[in-house]
View: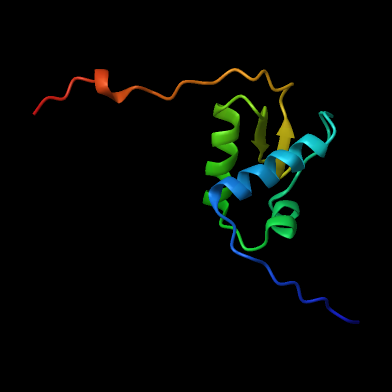
Amino acid sequence: MKFIMREFIELNQTERQLILYEMFLSFPYQIDEVITYGDIRFILGKLEKRTLQRDIRDLTDAGLLCVKYSKKKKGYMWTGQPTGEIIPKKDISKKNWNI
């Protein structure tokens, strides 16, 4: 059996997120289908899970993706159609700081 050695280039955050966005867009909007961490690593190469989680959260917060991780199916699943609405980040400036 022959193994194909693939060389990967280092991608910056914008490049990774663009590829992730295109991956999910080409993925059918079906409840039963999942994209696993292995599927994503096959396309993006060496990628830490935490980095992937941050990238997906950024795309979700921007209203471009509507996916959640399913522990049961061990992958990302669509939770609905993307709305395009930006989800505001929590504002910590209004917190009372007792110093």
